[in-house]
Length: 297
Image (cartoon, rainbow, N blue to C red):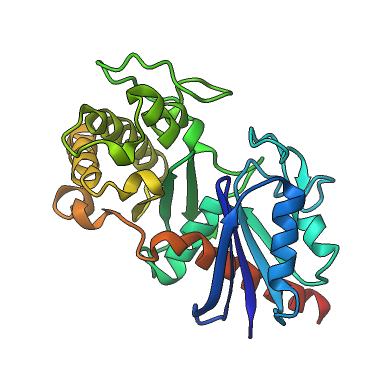
């Protein structure tokens, strides 16, 4: 069975084709431009591929309520041109297929729970820290939805005592995204993170904010695994700094071996690498196909 997968990111789209065993047979990527240009490339990629369903993990915020008139839309994004873009509707206009739909970070969390670092676990938190900050949650084996979906990247955090940067978020200023996303690093230090040495003071500040958020996630959601992906987390030296800070924040209060003895295996990189979201989109497509099959029987 061939399933289509789309990781719809604010910087780039990744399209792929795989099967229910988690084998990706093909994929391609292209920059995220105006919706008309970008979604035309998506349609061109899937034409004639013979997929049975398509799963989409999208940047957001997005509407996930099936009975909502704006279901399948990206809603209040600051991404120019994408406000109220009906991604699912546009693709359904050409492909009469089941289309699964969720956030890119929920998709990445789902991929890691299915085939990656959280395989076999019922609960995990997935952070992507890049041009923005997104957080996906799996709880009780299910993707977390509610009024909307988790937007933990916009939760405010305690300020680092030596950081006076005002923050970059268009909506909230100094939320986690406004302080710790890639553009915030570049604005604070006048250079992108990729150009800063590992001993630069930027990383102590960065690890502080990420650890503050992870501490909150541990106390609020009690995940069995915390997975950190995205471009900023390509700086591997951040991981030990974050783990140390999380342990200091918790101060032994959460008395479990994963945090006291094995935190190196608890706060980890994605096992699926940069394709965690694409693998998760594959699962979204499979789930939607199963749902459509049940509905028609």
